[in-house]
Image (cartoon, rainbow, N blue to C red; front, side, top):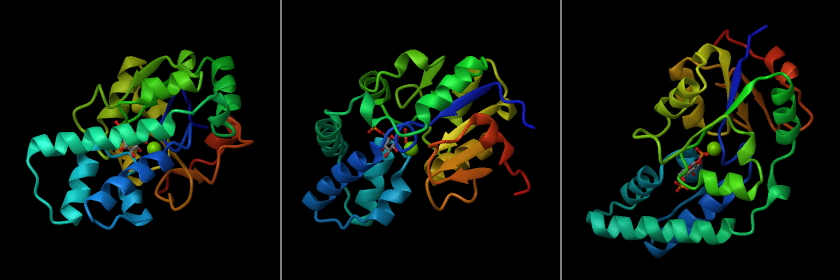
Length: 219
Ligand code: B16
Ligand code: MG
């Protein structure tokens, strides 16, 4: 059985369902720009940084804008997102996360965050989870967004654990690719994530041991 010394959690879509707020905010912005933006487009943007997400939408609408306008649009999206995420509290932590973190703490397994979001610390505070993390690497600490493995490599390094002993939890295709490129075992949370080493619709009711037992490295 894999010897797990640390776990790295993605934030949006794994710990809390703020992914729907990112979607709603981008959709509102795209509507204003008269660019169609579907759930399928949103799937492409999960785990992708704010600037890369905007570039994706502009490309889709064949819109070329100057950098000042792009900054304004990113600020606008973020304000919309913050408005939607405002009422987030500890009751919004997704089922299964707290028991898993309790099990990790009891087994002296370190806990890290690997998120592309610049709002990660603020959300973790609202969820009353921030004290549980040994390290937090987020959109403010990275230069390359997922699918680049930088965010996970930095978190593993901060915990002094090599990637093969560090289990990543991800809800996005870009995040699974990032983890695999970095040499991490990765668990997919949600549907359509078969490229992960194990995937579950939800982490509710699962134990870390049970999850590790399901990892399949044959692909
Ligand atoms: P922000 P994760 C990602 O967080 C989201 O999945 C993605 O939709 C968002 O665009 C990105 O963070 C940047 O977020 O605008 O708050 O800096 O899934 O990597 O935790
Ligand atoms: Mg995510």
